[in-house]
Image: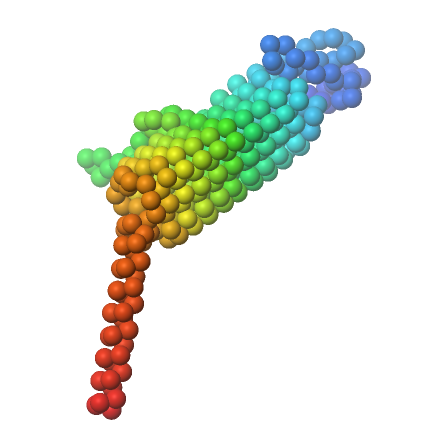
Length: 292
């Protein structure tokens, strides 16, 4: 970011020395790419790596595909080969990495980091979100050394998805990580690599989903639900807060507990445990009175 900013500042200083101010810069679009040109000299400044967006003051790489209606706020940077569709709003401090595509009317908050991902139409990505970083994949070799597994695929975010602040979504290793249309994700959620989430799902705060999980449509996860790796969850499943999924859930319905079981079974277990504890406490009290 600092290198890009220095190069952009140097370029603007050169323009000033030539008598061309920022107000004289006009933004033209050719093949859906914006290039900064001087209205006085009519020459394209292709030698610059990054140029300043006319709408917001942020920087974008000259190879990025930026719609004229995009707003890139000051301090944000859009890297090479990224695509930003109409009416996209990129907040200050956000980094849009290489090979990122953002759909129409999507709003990206402050200090977001996007890489190796596509984001659909009309999405909301709140501040501090990280999408497309490497997943937690390691193995131990014959010498006992911990080696990193390759993480080379992408994240695909559907349309009308909302992602809460400080949520992390890892890129795939053997399949893309996918978030379905109209899914809503709360703050502080961790979604591991290769996870596939269906449409219209609801993930509440502090949910943790390990790698290679497959979830159907209309799944609701209460706060702090944990899902172990390589587990499948059927459509229209609801999990109570603090539940832990340790094996496949193949039927729709409500579940709870650790490990998660059908909700009526979990309630019976809880009631039996309370009665058992009450009996034990009563026996101890009677014993202390008898021998006290």
